[in-house]
Length: 499
Ligand code: NAD
Image (cartoon, rainbow, N blue to C red; front, top):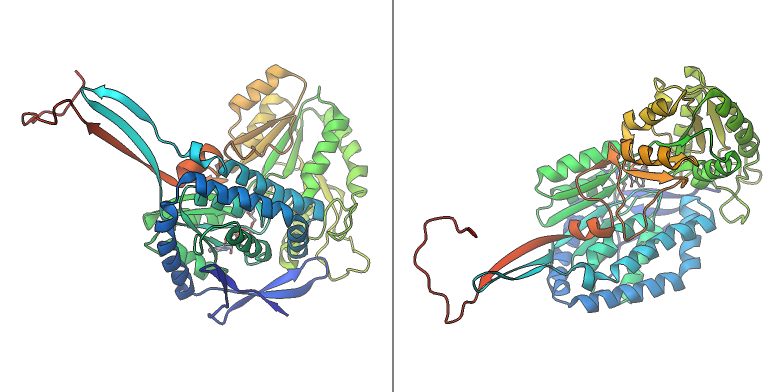
């Protein structure tokens, strides 16, 4: 069986802890590889390598750092098919969807290629007599990222493309469920010209995460995953003096107004609710039709579409979505569907009985649709993260806007309407971080920043875009005086002002 290594100091390093995790093929249910789970000592080794590499990398001029990113982009694109096949084989998402995952990462590289411009400081000439003030954005040093299973390419690249372009050395601790693509991308980064130690991959679980959070030489930690772990990483990392951004779970609502084009909305809800088997932090998991009449019409349109969803192995080009990532995760989603029935929601389409012929041990699950879900239900309050769409009926616009606004999560939200006034008011009032207006998955492009509110994100600065550069740099401000004839002043005991 394939055994993965870590990627330290520019090459593979075998795991030394004696602990391993299983990497499944979700379509067949078989264990296809094992991944080493790092000890504290192995993590420390990577930090020491990174410390040395970082000081040299930070001294490389920004245009040369950008050239590494240009090379990296070309290599990722060249290897797209191989990467997508590997990603699908470990995650279970369709090949086309894996390419989307990688392409989103490529778009972050494109953003990072602009680092000579993005990292520029500011300058004020003549702020006082012979005085100029200027600022510089300097890299932090060694930084680390801890990533989830659902975007094995995009999420690590959100972090390290920006971090490395800014002159940091990055240690990636990917999800132990999907280590293949992060490891392969690290090889490509080396091929692109990044010095050894600038990007390293240390596989592991809680032990490696705790080692990252407590290591005094790691300056910043970026985390994406579930909210409970995000909160833990944020508080423990901050307590150890680190800059931390920690993105968590989600429950994204789509408000459907009575004037919306219902066929278009149905299409959008099917794609955004069931794509990637619902294993997306920006998946739509709750639809909120405004008025009962609209809800009846929407359910009538959704029902046959959910029943007709083609669930198939990732390699089937016609598959809407593939298997869930693990048997354990499938079980968790099944338990939520059972609970929804117990709580009194109406199960309009029941995906629990679905079996994939020829892949009986795979982690497949049919699409489910719940109507008459209420805010008091646990299945509404929690993130399910599976192919399950819930409908919560609202009597009017105010009730509809209050649902996502009061929910514990605040990642994304969408409104479908033809009324510009309602859309504008919604965008302004809703208590959620990313808003789509007739756009079901409002994931901002790489040059804007990505991040939710409430329990969907802990910390101040978001992922990529301008916030990414802010997160991975710190500002130094210099006030310099070069008056004609040299510097000569009397002692001054009063705070200098510009009076
Ligand atoms: P997870 O929280 O189980 O794991 C994320 C990372 O944390 C992994 O690297 C894992 O090894 C590590 N980890 C797990 N348990 C830990 C513990 N007890 N202590 C320390 N580290 C631990 O998340 P997941 O199941 O891999 O990913 C799915 C979750 O990620 C969903 O909740 C989804 O909404 C969220 N997500 C959020 C965003 C966002 O930007 N808000 C993006 C993608 C995914």
